[in-house]
Image 1 (cartoon, rainbow, N blue to C red):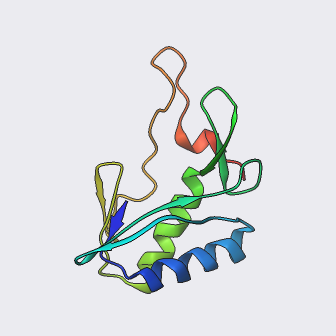
Image 2 (tube, helix red, strand yellow):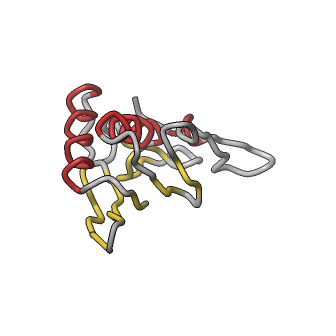
Length: 117
């Protein structure tokens, strides 16, 4: 992912999400390139804020809900921020909370169904 928000704003948003939702998400990638801050978030497996695979296996990845809450917090801190995630441009006007199929056509599983809440 990349955003026009600052590293400080992203870290502040992560702290807020962790406190509000009991998550343990943290920065995995942390790199400033020009005006863009490139980052990924991660979570320990089997805890709130983590996710499972489409087959139910526990992953040490941040969930769809963790990403959505983080984006919401970034927009609260910086209304003019732009976030690029999954090939999609996300702004305060819309684009956040778009669910996608991570399963198959025969056995669809959506990102929102893989979250450990």
